[in-house]
Image (cartoon, rainbow, N blue to C red; front, top):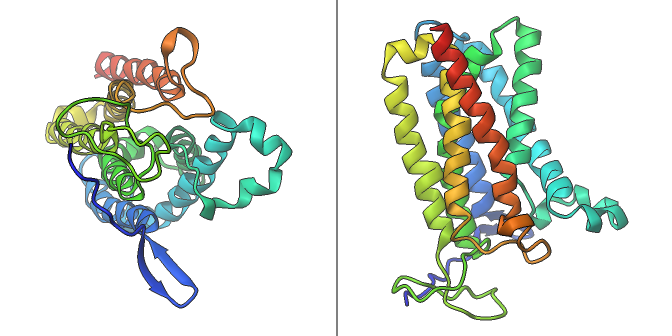
Length: 262
């Protein structure tokens, strides 16, 4: 087995103020994505001005935080929050869901584009390229926190996570997902973006991101331990897989629609 690196989840402590790696991961993903999005939005066919991108980032950030928290509450622990509704506001205690965050960003994008009279799919194609950056940093933060670990295994790179009460050697599935949802998906999106014909097919890159993430999450969930309060669902699938299936279907439809129109 490999020894789990004991990294303090708190990156910096100044008196009562604690800055956690998880928060820094969100900040890094948003800032790097914003800087890259400013450049992508200017490429032909232009999706938005630099000023509009700057304004959009605020909308998207709210969509990530509100959607991610609401998604966790509704998808993963609805029974708990029905009886403890005020805890749903305690985001500092953890609990964010990517699928909820994705819905939040989609809604924020639609509202922003309606306000600015922009094509939401054209802007969405640019946003899709930068999304894996945030996913990569988020999964690294999950690993540092020693949370969302993998299933028990006997592979030589297995790790025992300190918070695991069973203290079993497990897959470092957070790193697998960082590689699939972050590095591999970002490489795929850059390859697709580099082709001018793909950029001209409105909705193709958005569809590729949705389908690509869905497939990556479906695969990653085979190594990740299901949430203890949910376990396996119908036919042995996990909640993450159940929520990813619609993404694959919607993404596939957008790809088919964009190629047919192109």
